Image 1 (tube, rainbow, N blue to C red):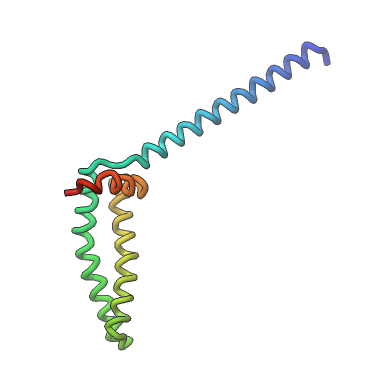
Image 2 (image 1 turned 60 degrees about the vertical axis):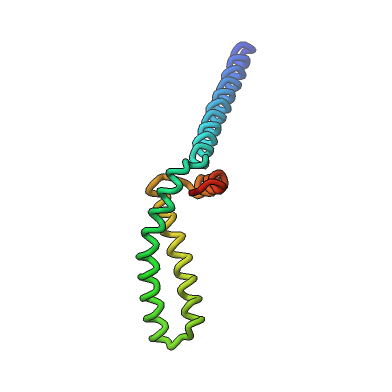
Length: 125
């Protein structure tokens, strides 16, 4: 192999490596920008829409859980305190799922909701 061929292969390898690094860096920056955009605080109006919809839907969830817990309490002869614990556990889990589904419907991440709470907590009316 001549010196010219070796130099040509070296230049080609360096060029390929440079292109790879540039493409990888552009993709990384693009992903980071999309993530930052998704985690940006949502508007006060959007936050209130999600919270109102969650509140409306939670009424049905509470009624459903209350009926189920009462059935279990009667079947197993549980104390009121134990039934209240079961209700609380089921309520928290169901509420998390409900709010997650509503957030997904509005295409809002949990971090965006959290940052919106912090941003708007002083003036939520």
